[in-house]
Image (cartoon, rainbow, N blue to C red; front, side, top):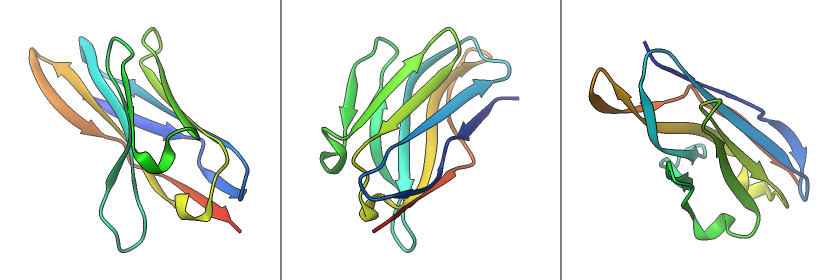
Length: 119
């Protein structure tokens, strides 16, 4: 069984910073893309940032220059450093990863972690 477990969410004032972590565990042989998505109340889940196994990154325009995605392949962990947070960044943040499990590539989600930015 494969799990993605997020941590690091919380309440922060506008202009502050948070660092989210997501660790993959279970029976898988390797990880391809890893990413972060977010979903605000009443809105759809949107991509925030994506990182490939080789380290290539992509960001939503709304977070470029403020958020940084990184990964530690030895720890099967992806991070999201969020700086200069704005109230509009308030959402549930979800980790997502493509993992090779029993020779099949599957897409997996974490349970989500809440980020609240106060003005």
